[in-house]
Image 1 (cartoon, one colour):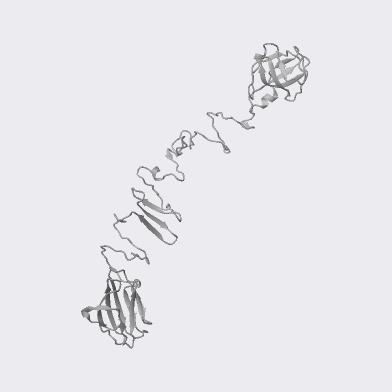
Image 2 (image 1 turned 90 degrees about the horizontal axis):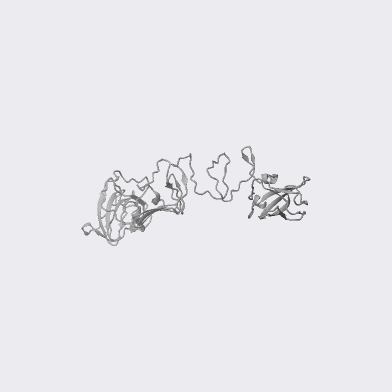
Length: 377
């Protein structure tokens, strides 16, 4: 909406007669100062009326002393010829001017309001359908109740983060730890609240030096724990037990278990029904071996596989039971037997013997002893 100018009681006689095509109106000398002086998009509406009641409304866009620059035939009037000293030029309130004003129908604005960069101050916007479309909202806190700043949302200037109730609102990429409370903790106070680390991501606990950390990740099959510049994982302050569920193995991959106090333990048993020769005993399947010779060819040659690396002790206890006929014998690897004599196994029907073997160099050198002729089960 352009700027419409007004002055009070602006009126003057026409100083020079005009015809319908004239675009300049000359007022009687010295009376031009009674009228506004438009600049830019400003204007005022003037009415010309002669002694016969002929009327024309013009739009004045500029004034130079007593000369008016006009657009003829405005507000449903037509350009006419007017005579000097008979025709009066006046600034009157016209329909065109009134239509430029904001219109009110009861309490409803029927047109758009363009503040053109100016401020609307101390206003209260209400109503369920109140909206702010496009543009910007600057320097205005959002509050739940008038005067209540305890939970207001504010956006500071200078690129600082927005706040809610004075605490920073975090966005993607922000340092969450830096925004924690002074204790440096987050409390998830609900049995239904958890922290999910998406697939392909990881949970990392770093030391004072970021390059020193312990990291956990899941590859859809295993949980992989990775340490960087990490020496020990220490469990402290635990008064109970470290318990593994049924079917869960602790695989140390031939590494050391240091200074354990072992209570109530057992050794894995593997049962082998000897069907051919040689018969291999896989150490990883159990170090207590029950050999059933009921279908074995005679003699039975034993071999060993997957023994621990040299420098660690491997012990195998073998229970040997003859079949209903007996007379089966065993060919051993090279063994340094107790007293230097290889034991003679029992060969009676269903008889049972026990043989213990040791090696500290992955089976290159064996030592052995036997318990012969146990009672028949």
